[in-house]
Length: 181
Image (cartoon, rainbow, N blue to C red; front, side, top):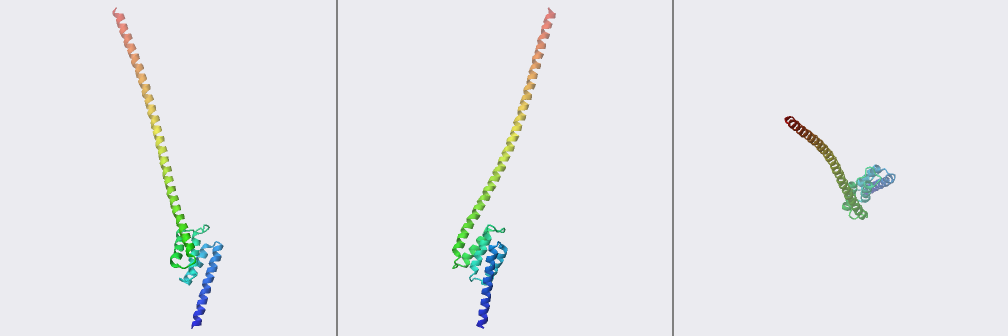
């Protein structure tokens, strides 16, 4: 009976080792999804025993890898945090802590950059609104200037008409005086 148990353990260990090796190979060739599947398989087979810690660590690397089109820093942080919390005695813990710190800083920087981008966008919109308002005020000022010019011209015409009317009145008065003499 103990021989069967040893044989089963040996087979499981072999499957775990094969999953890890295939995961490493796929990871090196850039097949991140395939590597992820193999590392997950190793974790399921190993449970809380080694090399589940290494597989979890490598899953974190997959999520953090800059060439991975499905890159996800939050999932990487989750994987590295799992190494720290679930495998406290693992030789991967210190590296996982470093990765968590680096990735959290990267996420904070990303959020700050997004906030800055939004502030810049809002500023650009405010500048555009101010430019449009300035253009409206410029047009209104031009229209007011034209109205003032028209009013001046009308006033000048009215003054000329009044002067002419006064001149005519003076001439009429002069003719009346000349007739009355």
